[in-house]
Image (tube, rainbow, N blue to C red):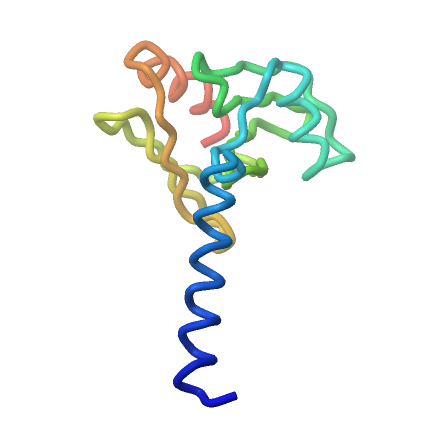
Length: 130
């Protein structure tokens, strides 16, 4: 098959798959249904460190986690979740929530969308570790 036909076929095929996934709703960010879901998301990343306390955001897109080893955060990364400890984090308030800069090349910056009250409270909850 000539490249002039193959290349557009591949490009339109990939674009079609992406559009189909979006229309089916599979591209929405993950939602943490409750504290137990946030705890399970944390345990997927850190099975040896069960949470003592979980604080879920109002929109259920993020959670603060307190464990015996320190504090951490769970947030959506696409349709899945991920989690990191907040050791060495630098936290700043943004117009839409918080920006967390971590000394971790796999997740150097986390942008959380929080309401105004949460954006003011969460840094205080995190600062004991940061």
